[in-house]
Length: 278
Image (cartoon, rainbow, N blue to C red; front, side, top):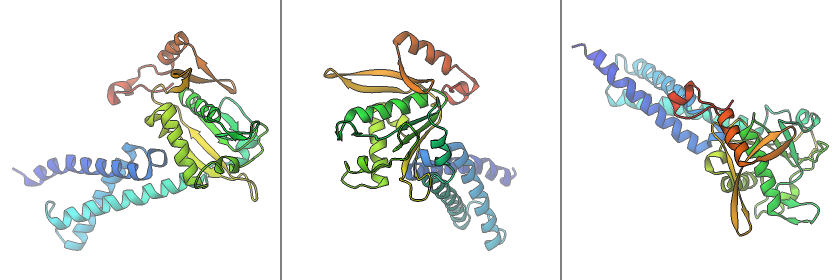
């Protein structure tokens, strides 16, 4: 029996499992919203193992597969390459360098863009108000349940950047990290943990000397996202969608029809076990 073929047959699933574990670890560290997808990270991990094998052969000569040096080089290279790429992606998605905030604000509101002056501060009543939080959650849910979209917090209806100072003043630690943590916690309570992890959140300014806004980028969700909010001592759960440049809750019959039409079964359902948004 050719031992090299046996080694290869054993090594392939081991490498895939290792790459998957590394991808899962890094997505937990950086967060799903700031990381590449699991399949992409797994492929990067496999490439890292290949780099490690080449380095092991170069350093140790004709190195064998199942020896400590080869294993250490493979694991180290896979982890290192994956971490570097994940960190670069997380940094790029955090600083919002690829988002033209000025153009976004100039384009005004539409079925894919919405502005919120604040996320928790009631401007008219000059106080913190949970209704403002629910309004943000409704917009995010509507974008996730539709074709996706972008919510800009800290901009008025005309597209002028107002900033986040009033919302920040309600927090013990008024910084962007604390704001994002609060926002994801609020979305987790209203929409569920899986839905709260989906939007990409960045902080950026439309220009020099202009107040910083919070940009929440939502891609279409792979499954329906329901919003739960308190009402009359209990709670209600609704399905929110975008209708023109506003968000609207669907009635029961409408929601059933919308879910059946929007998340129609596709080949990915059979392969991945989940529907795909249309």
